Image 1 (cartoon, rainbow, N blue to C red):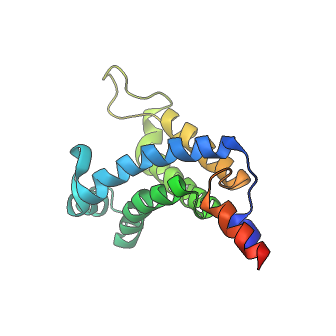
Image 2 (image 1 turned 90 degrees about the vertical axis):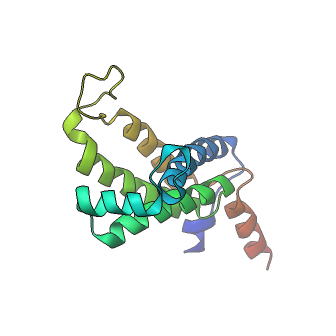
Image 3 (image 1 turned 45 degrees about the horizontal axis):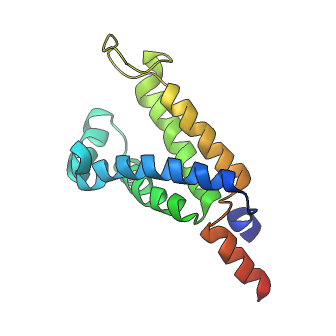
Length: 151
C-alpha cells in the first residue's frame, strides 16, 4: 500500500505537473471554500451544489474540501497518487453533470450557454499522469518513502 501512495522517482516532470495543477486548483478551491477571487464561499457554493446541481450534501462538501486541501497536497507532493485519483473523480463528475452538454470548446466568445470540456480533458490528463508517476522530485511522497525504507 505504501508503494502505491508514496513510490515515485526523482523526475522533474511530475513536479511541473503538480505545481501547475495545484496552483490552478488551489485558486478554484479558495473561491469555493473562502470566497476568494470572486467566489461564493463555502455557504454559497454548498447552496449551489445542493440546490441547483442537486448533489448530495456529502458529495458537495467533499468536492469543496478536496479541491482546496487536495491542491495543497499536490503542491507539497503529499499522497500525490491518491490526490490525483480524487481529482480525476471530481473532474469526471463536473464534466458529466455540468459541461458535456456544451460540447468540446470553452465559451471563448460568449456564444454558448456554458463551457465545454476542453479544460477538463487537460486537467484529467494531468491527474492521470500524476496517478501513474507519483509526486516526483521535491515531493513529500519521495521523502516519506525514503524515510520508511531507511527504518
